[in-house]
Length: 216
Image (cartoon, rainbow, N blue to C red):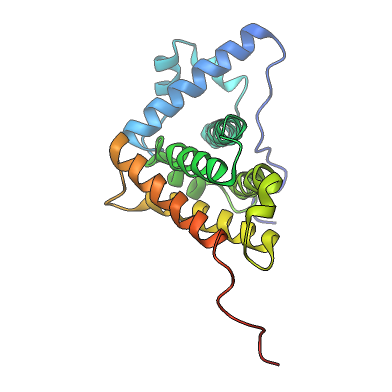
């Protein structure tokens, strides 16, 4: 047989407050190092030194660098889900308010450590659960849920499909921005780009279908 089908890819979760605090320091250190030097240059010993913990304490929780990367990926993706959900909870109670909050939150979340985020997703082994896809699905669901109370404002023939298209378009635009060499960076540029995304999404939702029935 080839490969390592029984190899664990998930790390041991902390059960005590002190252990959780140590894990948080380790993951912050790993993110700092990976953001500045890349995943290839990140080492367990370097993370331990940055976090102020013994190398052995990291190996008691992680079998190696691959599991540490898995934990770092999960931490960053969970933060994005929580951030977008919170921004939508605070959005102005209108369709435009939801779209504004969604566009700004997504752009900011993808722009945060933008160089590291795509690298983390590429680093995942093909045999591991696709955590990135689950986050995209959750971010998609968050918009549909937040916009549902204002579906009567949508002038497309199928509001549900229109919202689905909107979520896909805004998600794709924000992720693409994080990969572009000329990405919108800086507070002013990101704000302007998020406003443009929101305006385009709102214009689409408020515009009736321009095509009639599909020919048989």
